[in-house]
Length: 234
Image (cartoon, rainbow, N blue to C red; front, side, top):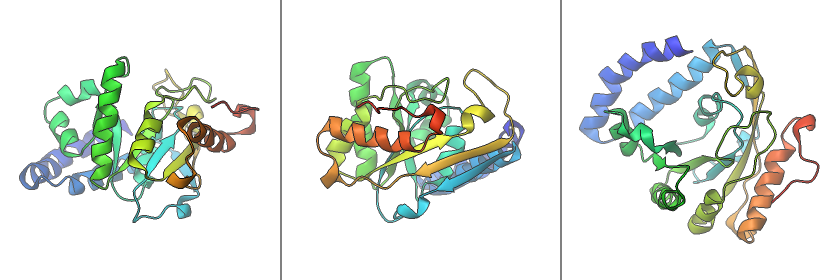
């Protein structure tokens, strides 16, 4: 997978980067990146079983909220999302020459996990991305789980949902923790499941805690039985 991505990078540099710089249009480069992510995962022997994607209307804007169990989660999940999606990215990556500028053009959102004020700023940047008509994809635990069970959720994504009033789609990822566990570099061939749950409409949000409980219950319901919470927490 890494060798394929290394081979694809010069192509992106020769075609995608100049086009993006000249036109200020990220869409061509975005499609190249999504193709590279999906193809790299297939080359590594990771097959994806997708459930519930028919519940998503490609014409609408959503906030996708997912669990996070492996570094494989973004390469498997992001290419499945209809239309372009923004994501929250560690702020340090925005300091990398060229890459940082491209991520800014792509309306990706820098986030400093250890700084509460920076977290509020990230929510504001995410609002701007959604107002442009982009989807937003967020790993609501903030960190990867070691054992595949749900960690406590961060509150920022739910402030964002309240602010933007766009439907929230819970996503359950399972199987990637076996293909590439946390703290492991090697990838084992296997099958991962990405399950899109029914969108939660703004009219059904309730208060912030209610929305968090709905999202947690949906994600929890898609996990393998031995990893599910018996009484989902808000």
